Figure 1 (cartoon, rainbow, N blue to C red):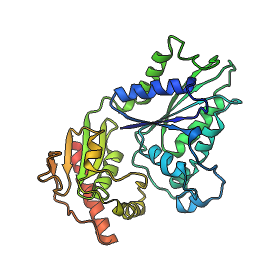
Figure 2 (figure 1 turned 90 degrees about the vertical axis):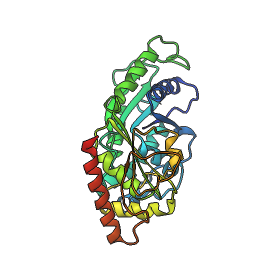
Figure 3 (figure 1 turned 45 degrees about the vertical axis):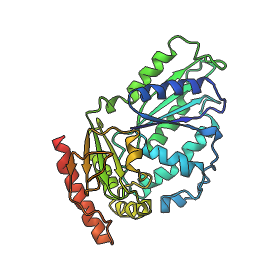
Length: 322
């Protein structure tokens, strides 16, 4: 499970850095892998409204947003955005990052692609302001709710602080840590307690295991944590599999190919499915279930469609037995 924090404050070591750190550390102690994206320090272009993503599903800019921010957003189960209030809105840097979410909006609403992780992804807001106005956080909440909708995240709430003047103001408050930990527990609540850690393994790690991951993520309850891996990763097959799945309106474009050892560093399976015998004589892991799917990737679209159907059928039969 992955929790990603979008740090929107341009001031290092400030109040929102403090609360975001508390939030992510709480989830880390509960078993999450965590990543922080320092948005003001990252290099990416503004959305220019060109409309290219509405046709291709891709942004024309190859920058930190496309290569670093977007992939983590798509993989995350929890996304938390932290920002101070500037003129009754989030920081300009964070708002620019939200604007680039138009690409996700296009994939969802124009191309009608379904994100396998949408049922369990959660979005949360942390914000602080020096003053006490009634509507201080209204614009940030509205911006965020629409952004979360575009990235297929359920809005889980906001924790806001008024009267936080200057660096260290929130660190000095006796109730800050307790409130942030409660917010983190609320944001991740539907994902706990995990009942199963389900791992799909195949040889190439690009086709069968990613398809199985997508099916399981869509159909299993959020307390079933799912991952995937390959014993001999073949990332060159990823684009072909992405295209096959998009023809079935399933969006796995941003789901990477993981080597088995890489997955095991952050995921401890309670049930491992060897999809094609790739774990035979592999000392790293023993399979609990072994399927007999072909180890070679499909050679054409017809073979790919048949394989996808096979994987879907087997995953559908497996999940009710867990």
